[in-house]
Length: 474
Image (cartoon, rainbow, N blue to C red; front, side, top):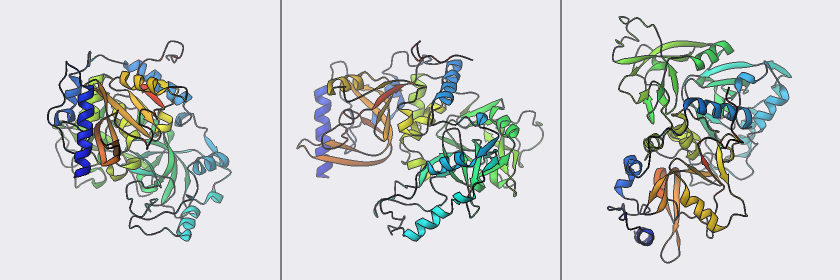
């Protein structure tokens, strides 16, 4: 408790020193949590401080042009429609080995027990790299349920220390129902497929993907009208008649087509549809083939008929819908991590982003300011204080979404394991947050010598590119 009191005192002093006359310090502080007030945990607190909060930043055609530029120029993305009709062995092998080999440091399982060398060799052998054919036809599929993407074909969760169960080193990302993929390889045990999605290539459990033709897959992706999930997540209506479609989770930004022409007097899975949207979802038959079936999505669920307009107010409202969600490295724990969080916020407005922070922060598709060793601490501080709501601040391995200024200082919302600050007696104290959290930016410490601001790599702002960089509109 003394540590937290010390921490709170430090941040209260910081707030007092940076207060401006037109705005009083936040009223009710939450003990031990970086001096955050209850009021600051609401999107409206920050929206009210914005000028032209509802002004559209990018229109639909501009977003589509930016997405096209992303797919065309960002090497971390995969345009599945442009992959060749046949894949050669070297391409598939490069994708698989691009995720790395066995970690060099010792690993522990979820119970803290060491992972043996024999266990690791068995997992690596399950990739059966020697069985990749010289040439194979490109196969397409759709994801049928939220699923993990893994660096190796195994469910074994592994960690670098025996007391860590948060950062699973085999976890890469997550994919959602309706995501198109190319199936490039199968594991020796047949339970895993190596797939290429638009934003990532990794291993997925075969039961989560149904194989179809390119026409089926992309026809589904392009189908309209549709609904966009605008809540943190929603679920389809429970149904005993179709268990695979019952209470199926759909996360923010997922697009699901409506089943147009469904007869008004015909029940869907035993239920009248007048209080719900009839949506079309991909299904997987026993032989792994792709099919489609209707499901119900309640009309009062947090969805919209199209992507939300890209405005500051919508960015803030969407971000705060995740507030308090458990941190999930690579979408583990049915959550998401820092890059997944900002990616899904922007996806609900139709903006595509790379999967990892290392790619997001430098993508050629985005307007950005990149920092180098030539940038002085004063310049970095000036840039941080000039950041606007919706801007994305990148440091090594992490991204934060700017929500505005309070008492003249920049604040962020981010999906984080924790925050470290200096106390009044110059000690570094870490608060374990493990959630989507609201924090001030300035006090956050990267290490003993550097703050987060000192280590900024870039600030990305989703906005029109300068004329000299603007993508050609189709």
